Amino acid sequence: MISSDHLLGYALASFVLIVIPGPSVLFVVGRALAYGRRTALATVCGNAAGNYVVAACVAFGIGTLVERSVAVFTVVKLAGALYLVWLGIQAIRRRKALASAFAGVTEARGDRRAAREGFLVGVTNPKALILFGAVLPQFVDRAAGHVPVQMLLLSLVSIAIGLVSDSSWGVGASFVRSWFARSDRRFGLVGGAGGLAMIGVGLTVAVTGRQG
Image (cartoon, rainbow, N blue to C red):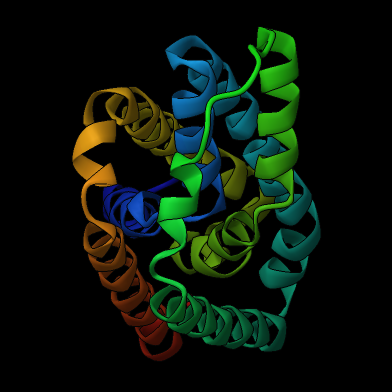
């Protein structure tokens, strides 16, 4: 049902969007530094569950409309592309925000509480809505039908990438805390590069979206 070209293309697009520091990364890094590695990993799992809830809602809502209407497909694509560009501009303007995740140590968190908090971040993350609502539809085969099912299957790729990426950020944060803390400029470089990458993805979605 899903071609290898579509699968690879979506995996690459997902990777670019997911590895850019956003709400989920900021939250996971903050949990790692404030509460430790175990809490960070519990947060990652909760965040992944929240993201998949977004994917399911989008798949059975937007996915059904996309399957039936080229006009809806185009509107969703352009709206998502514009929002991606906006997020990229915001990331550049606020590129030092990553430093705020490296604040203070407080009381310990239970695994369930950490997972719940991660879930709330994941289900309200605007990047998840854009990824699953605007980018994902570009990689489904509308002619093959079953668009919602295709979207659910492809979204598992994003979830897997997100688990690896966010876990890496969380685990790595405990080892590089002192290195980051020595220079705010390093946070700025990460945020600025991420913003430019997001703008690039948004423009690509706008001009090369499939007509399927």
